[in-house]
Image (tube, rainbow, N blue to C red; front, side, top):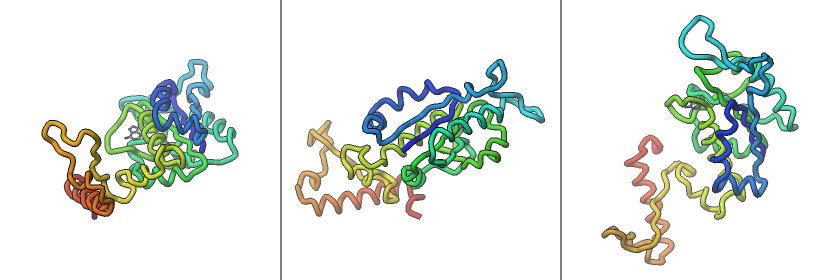
Length: 225
Ligand code: ADE
């Protein structure tokens, strides 16, 4: 899979994408993450990428020209057209279902904005889908892009050590994940539930299902409705 990121701050991506599962997936060539700097495409001599909003108001708006030129160049780098996603707080809410959908694509192109937002013609002219990672406003789309990349990459076959880990993740079956325990059996008077030490796999399975349901009921009842 190829993931392109169009950003003003490509350096922000180096560290988060160089650890753990994402790093392993890159090393195994399950994913190719290509960062492109929007500023490199600014045609004006100051490399300006933002300007004041028409109609007045606070903040700066990302200009069309650098984003369109960057996207057009990036698109040409691979034959797959890919799903083009604009990261904005007003977009479709990102969730595990969308992560699964995107993990099945051959290519995803993420456009991260900064400042007050994008010139609306970027959305209209690129035909991009708008995606938000939650109902809060970030300083830019970079962190949102990293969240989405992480959630997608761990779903790619072979990315996780244990093929079953993703299947048991929270949300993968519409429920939160059951609680986990590891050694020691007792820590500060808190004991591992007996059933997990019983060796009875049927009972363990039953307990986990029931715990997942209980946890979802108390913490995220909205997932059950
Ligand atoms: N850019 C700013 N806030 C955002 C959010 N919540 N999700 C995606 N992109 C954003």
